Length: 196
Image 1 (cartoon, rainbow, N blue to C red):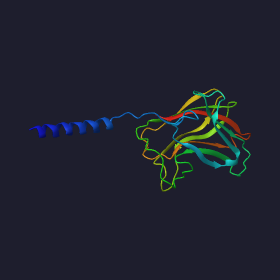
Image 2 (image 1 turned 180 degrees about the horizontal axis):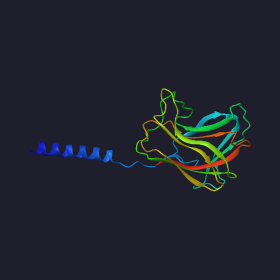
Image 3 (image 1 turned 30 degrees about the vertical axis):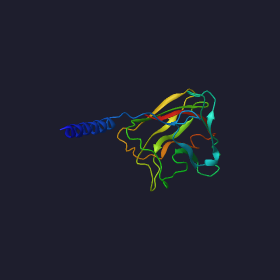
Image 4 (image 1 turned 45 degrees about the vertical axis):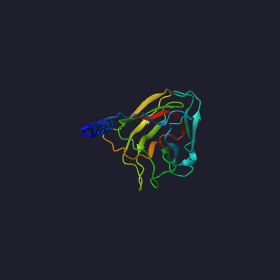
């Protein structure tokens, strides 16, 4: 009798554990919160297009949205590689273009939130996105915002992830800009990038 009661208690415990895991809330997952933050999960390593026109400072102290640092992106628009566009992916692991295992299972996230501002205002970003890397170990899905015109004040942006397959995301965040929309280049600032 005691063995049967013990077995029933064990079964209830296992079932309860499964239920609590199934209904566990997604915890905030940072792409970037501050330069020295230990919970930054992606690296700005995927430089694209006219990559020679880009500088990225992940420890900029020019009025961050929160904390002590933000990301400063300088894009000259010189077209050093002749592409007419440029962008940067935050990847896991670094330089992962879908050719190596990596990324994170972000199942349960419903949105990607980030803060951005322009150095002057009027900077035209062709796309802010997550996912979209292809290959053997490519991203399981993608989502984004297109044609975003920044203001000189910090503004929160949200990419809706409802219904997206987030089981494997190597490209955690990305921006892309065209020279035609920014002939003189730009300076933009990014901060507090997270999945929620």
